[in-house]
Amino acid sequence: MSELAGRAEEIAAHLVSHALGADARKFDADGRQSAVDFMLEWPNGRRGALEVTLVTQAKSSAWQGLAAKEGWRWPAPSGWEFRLSGDDMPYRRARRAVVRAVELCDRENVDALDRLPPDIFSSDPDLEWLSDIGDLRRASFEPGVVLLPAVRAEFVDASTSDFATLVERWLHLPHMPRHVEKVRSALAVDERHLFLVPVDEVLPARFFTNDFSAPTRRPGGFSGIDGIWVWSNYWHQYLVWLAGGWRWLDFPPKEDA
Image (cartoon, rainbow, N blue to C red; front, side, top):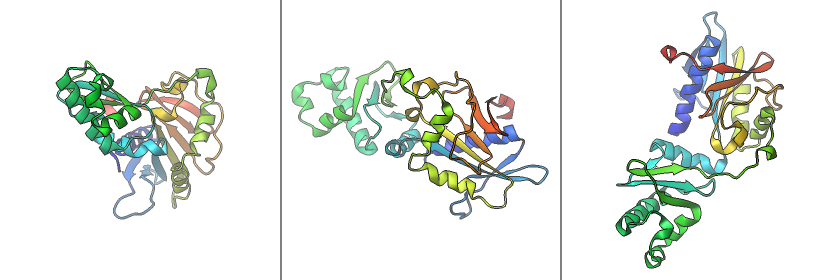
């Protein structure tokens, strides 16, 4: 499991257990195969299944997990940012190339990869390749290279304004049906809950923050699931479909964290 996915599970278990008044116990452990991530347990003996998944494009899920392990920063003696131009990145090759490019840029006293002298730039195929997959520039950060996702040009009116429609579209991502089916088929439980953690690349600009109204309808494709929970990194609340409707919930007080 990537650090990013592990952190998502911790957050989901904390938020759901607080909202429902249940204890969340790690369940996909001790050799259990294809088990849901957590078992929810209430004082009255009721039990529930909780499955947690990142919502991410298939191409980026692998490298984002590796990036999270390093805190989205690569080592360097000076401050830089590397912004991807697309969703995919061969992580280890890109890391090596960026570290080498920073070394050359510092030596030549230039502030961007494309400002290296032509003879130096063309002498290393990895530098040309690096310029094709992203943009490396000096920044006023502390030493290190900060990794940034691609910037998407998007007209807000071109994306759906219905968050329930967006959630339905996530079902077409390759990894999603497996998680839905896993919680749907959980045995010996009274409730089934699915917690979704969308990363930036699957969120239209209008949904980057939680400044939008809760949806008014249940998304299709989630039959058999009692609770659909959604939280993203820049949201200051979390969203849940439960008991027939959507609503925003506040984070637990810090003393409960």
